[in-house]
Image 1 (cartoon, rainbow, N blue to C red):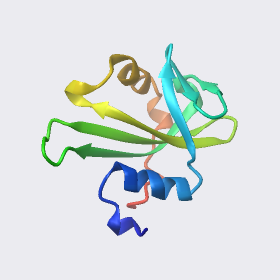
Image 2: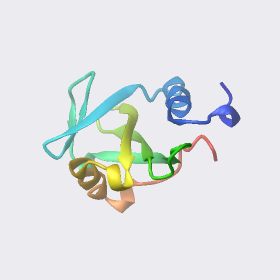
Image 3: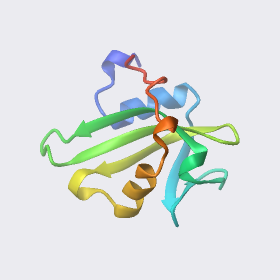
Image 4: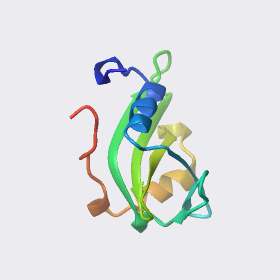
Length: 111
């Protein structure tokens, strides 16, 4: 799939997976946890290397954010979260604690 054809979150996730971002993450007890390896990361231990924001096609208030993450221990993956009024508080708080110096757009496939 070419980058110009990416229209939604699933398209972007597939493209990033092809680039090695294969881990899926979840948030629990203020930590980011790899679903596969069970590695646990604090906000300071991750780099957000790209972000993509989406609005729902039928409902603009249906928003989501796709984070492309590189973590210690050579782990790379994605995290899709609800954004705006539907956001989970624990998830939003975790990403708000990621140091600004750990956030870039250097691996954004649209650049």
